[in-house]
Image (cartoon, rainbow, N blue to C red; front, side, top):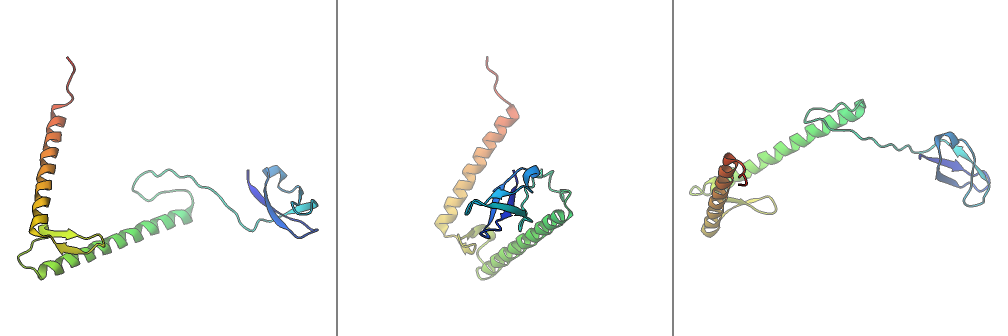
Length: 152
């Protein structure tokens, strides 16, 4: 049920109340003085819009301004994401330029987004975890290729 505004001519109180669309012009009792208040043009209008996203293409919601705004937001997000990537690549290049014996595989990202060179111990742990991951993924891949086992 929509919310409408009423204004009491006796005490001047402006209040909101829910009413059926057919009853929006009918007077309501003022909650402050119990006099009949008249409906007024609302100062705010609210709406709710449910739209189903149909994929990674510009959406046609039927509301031109909304479509344009969404496309603009998507474009701005992509530009910001690419800028972050460029900054990260630049940070890595600067770190590698100062350490000629270090490769990109020796870098680790800190919680604040900056990069650092891993210690030999950290690099060893990283390599072992990568090997475990590759082995596990290989076993999963073999299981998928065989298909499900059938009960006998």
